[in-house]
Structure formats: C-alpha cells, structure tokens
Amino acid sequence: MTSPANTDTAAPQLSAGPRPAPGPAADEGLSRRLRALACTAPLHDLDVRKANLAGEYTVYAMAEVALAAIDHVTLNMDFDTGADHDQIVARLLPRVAAQA
Image (cartoon, rainbow, N blue to C red; front, top):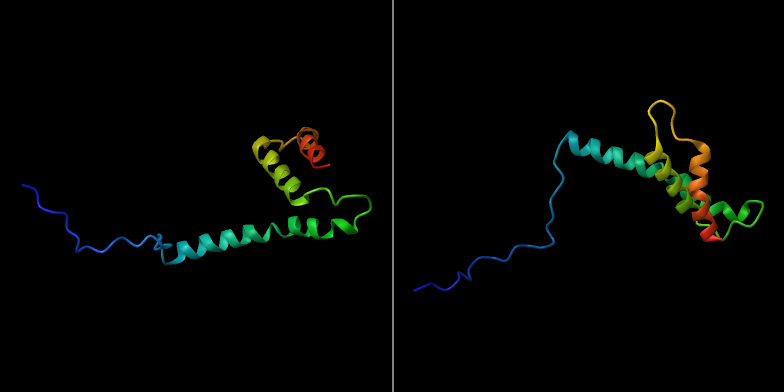
C-alpha cells in the first residue's frame, strides 16, 4: 500500500532566482558589464542626432546598423590584420538598403 503524498512541504519560490556570488568576483563582473554598457552610448547618440545630419537618415536604425557592424567585425577579425573594411561594408549594405 502506498502512502499519500506529503502536502506539508512548502512550494518552491519561483521568483527567487540565483543570486550573484558575493565578493570581488561579483563586483568585477558588474563593473565589466557596466563599462560595456557605457560603450553603447555612441549608438544611442547616433539615433538621437541623426535628424541633425545632412541628408535623410531618419529611415535608418543607426544603432542596429552599428551593432551589425560590430558583429561582422567581431566574426571576421583576424589576429594579425583585423577585419577587412571593404568586406564589412559589403556585408552591411544589404541591411542598410533593407532599412531604406
């Protein structure tokens, strides 16, 4: 004969997620992430100021284009020579054209 399930135990709390490790490792990780986030300020600035640029740039999502450029450079980076400028521009053109 089986016994009924124990109903006296409390249900696990779903909102309590893992907490960051205390100490210098957590501070260093947070610091690195905040520095990385600060690097995106120029991307936001591009979108804010594109109306002031000469020409019609309002149709472009400047931050998206910049992030795509960063992705392409990162994926095509060579330790000795870096990413090829013309190749990166050629890969960005279809994305920019799709926005226009």
